[in-house]
Length: 306
Ligand code: BG6
Image 1 (cartoon, protein in one colour):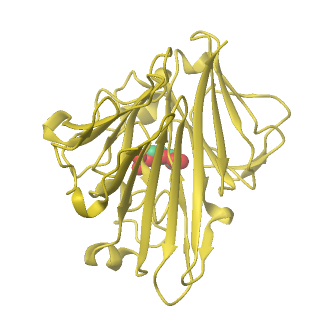
Image 2: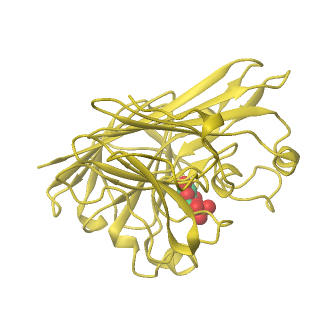
């Protein structure tokens, strides 16, 4: 096992590497990113900005995560695609609309705590504690850690520790964007008969007993659900599984035609090639963490040919 404790590894140390398993390089605009590989040949990329996973490709498969060709790599904006970390709130801030959508975690650099490897896995740990400006937005001290474990699957564990002296409530998501051949032909199983809040239609509905299909703009927070979702992509002959723990919301999103045109970092014609299935804790499933306690949300993504 090779390892590098935080004290030995400045953030994004470009010289650090575990041969064949982990090395730093830079993406567009010289943004530091960590390239990971597992013994079976699966690969992943994590930007230091937002601890944002931008790429996951299991051995023998095409890339599983979608990134927009219009993504803005300026070190300040959220990256469009991959897995943005939404924290400490999901969506717009409840009272202050001027605050960043989906919180501050995805638009700030994270520290690198360790990078290790075993016979079967490559593991990178990132963390952050809020600075003064972030405490002004959400006045609660905390420590947030993301553990990225790569094998043939990608497992993300987001651990939030309350380091303050009072309880606080957060909403959060591992906002995963998936690459599909044509969103009009895919379907999602695992959320049948589940209640959801629709941000498009407004109001609360219950999914019928059929798989979810995309026929229009879709923006739904499925509630009180812990089930594994399967994304079936017949054109790619692939099935993606999203297993989760510690999360009781699953968000399903595709912006469709008009909303895509209104997002500057999202190509007008990109909507058919993606959909989001987000491991979340939002709305009534937001999480209250007591002082000194921690809560962990995990999402495990794997793919198989069909
Ligand atoms: C989804 C939300 O999780 O993220 C949508 O449910 C939102 O309402 C989408 O449009 C993208 O958000 P953002 O802030 O990355 O543009």
